[in-house]
Amino acid sequence: MLACVASVYAQDWPQYLGPVRNSTSPQKGILRSWPENGPEVLWTVGMGRGNGGPVIKEGKVYLLDRDDQVGDNLRCFDLSSGKELWNFAYDAPGSVRFPGSRSVPALDGNYVYSCGHNGDLYCIDINTHKPVWNKNVWTDFGGGEIPRWAITQCPLVYGDLLIVASQAPQAGVVAYEKLTGDVQWTTPSLGNEGYVSPTIIKVGGKDHVVMITASSFGHGSPASGGKVVGIDPLTGKILWEYTNWQCIIPVPAAFDAGENRVLITGGYEAGAAMLKIERKADGSYGVTELYKNVDFGAHTKPPVLYNGFFYAQYSTNERRDGMVCMSMDGQVIWKTGRSPGFNKGSMILADGLILATDGDKTLYLIEPDPSAFMPLASANLLEIATDLAERERYGNQNWAPMALADGKLLIRDQSRLMCVRVAK
Image (cartoon, rainbow, N blue to C red; front, side, top):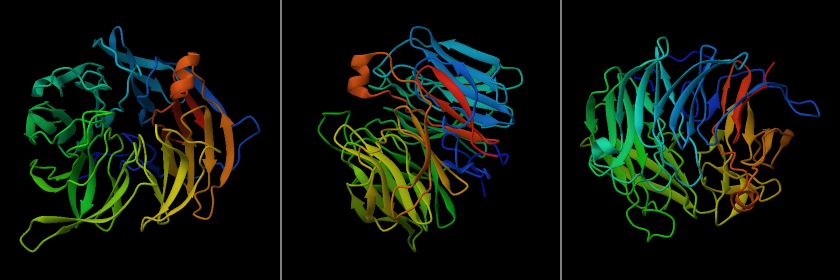
């Protein structure tokens, strides 16, 4: 069986959403209480604005930073001290609403892979700090003006392949040979571009790459043509499609719910859809929609799953449901609403607890419980936006995915990367 990442150490966080791309960490010994002023902050380093998250391997942290006037900057830090060890910067000027970086690198062997704001895909040798190869996932396949909120791709390593969603006119999903950058396969264009990164879902013991496309070209456009697509990761062959998903700006990746089920979530009143994928006698695949529920969804990141219940942050332009709990069969159990509010923050499940930022300024320690929202501790650690008008309209925009390794939680706000001790 091929793995999403070829070699994962027990305490590493090598890619978007963690070791198996489901926001779950093997970390044990999570502290169940914090001092009054919050958990110990071990170090902070300055960052440009943005929501690109960190990855961790063997005591080193990698993060794609950005200056919209100049370009992207892959930075490497020591996990213990925060000391910057090296960086690799390249020209890629340009800006969209919500400035800065917005993707998460992937680590594999001696290489780090990152995809920037304008679609620049780099393979960097972590020992020499120099590029091995680079491509552009957008312009190489006929892309013109970049999407409204730029390119937001978190690369997926699968065996010898590096998989990203180009979403350009000439390619939907692309697989590169990870050591050379040679294109191994492409799918046709899958439809309207969005901001979802591919992920791996198990179907009958087989790996499928699952990709989600937008039902329109952006907020306010007529809904049409959204898809969820299953792809053979070795050949690029499209194995199945679900065409009843309507999300105008899809961001969360698909979630493997087990037993050949795929949970799809979105914002903008898309909610959630649970799909069952089954292989037929002739070898083809069929898709059954088990349920849809508009009262459970996620705006920017997929939910976490614990003991048969899903937990997600479901606040969008249209609703402020906060953190929401849903059963495996699609019944919404509770919502926090605005008290406390959770809006595009990040969550990690570790040692039976949820560590969550609320998208604003607060880090929470939560015991996942279907009977009620159970916070164990909270601390206001993240900085607030200095632009009052922007903060009034969009909040503090602390939306970056977190990372956890060796008992250290990495949190990014709009000016810093912070390392917090959360385990014994």
